[in-house]
Length: 604
Image 1 (cartoon, rainbow, N blue to C red):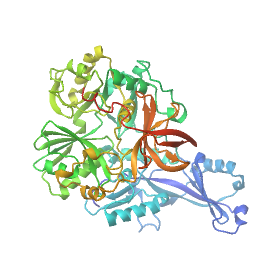
Image 2 (cartoon, helix red, strand yellow):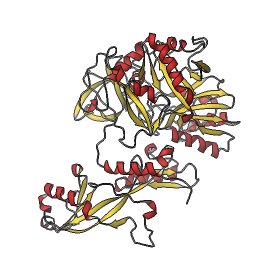
Image 3 (cartoon, rainbow, N blue to C red):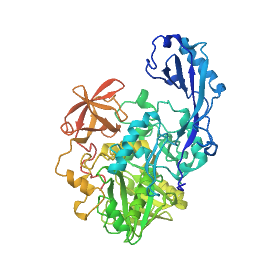
Image 4 (cartoon, one colour):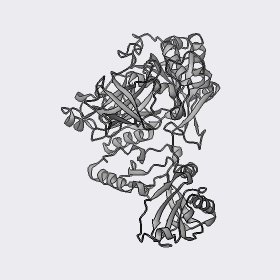
């Protein structure tokens, strides 16, 4: 009707009533028992007077093609299909074994009801960026009902919901996630895992091997353990680095914290700090913004000053109108009317849609293109990064010729590259962007040049532990749409005097009022204690905040967590506890960053 693709997969879910059950009839009420979930059986149960209602996900997926859904002209309730007893036979026997009172009780009635599943199991909510006036509220289940209704009402009335709904954003999907085959496979997978307890680092199981970076084969040759991010296969660590160098003073992880983790990450972390490592950055979204109004658009959507000289690089924020942090990005000016904007792999579609929305609503003369797949990108970082790169290029790499936060075209081997002197790990180095067809040549040139300098290939596990020691914020973990730059100490990328920008008025209104909460760096008091993120933070036995992100600081010899705390507690030396599986783990607020606080290594 509106010409937009919405990735929804209807699947059937069974519901039956068993009975009558004398034990239920005795109490004489319609609902006298609480609704019960039985995760091991993939079921939930509720009372209907003397009958027992059972909803079951304990059967193979039963997808319904959209064209097969009947209309209201054909049936009073198109979401109900005929009950298929063969799919309930096994689950019925399991339920009766668990609840003997149900043995021998017949099925009074039942049906197969349709639920909508999305590729990531989250709802789809909000205004569509490409069709003015089109709002969506899809894949909402009964557990979402009240909260989703309130959020949509706030959104329509106030312009933004009071909750950060980026995980339900209409524009979050990658192009492949809008294809019918992908939606079908993901619908089946999310159905089967409706009651699954996921580890926070656990990737989806299928489909896999959908998107490969240009460097995939080189990482595979290093024994990479790949995880899925936005359809990409991304190296989390490389088993070729097992046992290479030291692993630091922290003990090995165990239990829940050790899942989807490897001690190899510690080796890669420390080798990056002592020598140099190559990191695959190809999955990061690359957006080209060109045209007469390119600068005007970026000055409006970003907090930092975009009116920089060609060849300069800036880190900046995107804000909502109410001042909350929508995203963070790195921007390089390539020419007076040409910028490249770099965003995270998962955040890319939302950021791209945001730029296009504001270009359209402000009637700006710009061309905005997603060029992610056109380029391979590799980060080379560590104290030996300059020596390695110098062995593969004739470009001058000293501080005067190539200062921090600058970019210039160079040749690596025989391939053209855009080199940007930036770092997400707190070490000297560059990000190198080359047309995809040259990527393996660039890798091989660097690899050969790095043999004498201890160069390794490293994964995202080491990258995250390196960044947390340096105090770099992690988007969607340490920031969200309800957190402003005041709470997370990012005012250094807000340029008040550059003119108006999205969210500026909201920030100005709060500028003189100290924030009531702040992001704080915590270190766990005991080396054996590890947390993973989203755990409650306690003070005097009461919850006062939560962990936003966490990892091991192998260089500083401490496990690290960032947490949003009351401002009065977010000062170095404050003692708190982190609740982890029922245990209260002691932690202390520390001055940040923990590693290289004056930034000397970045500018070496």
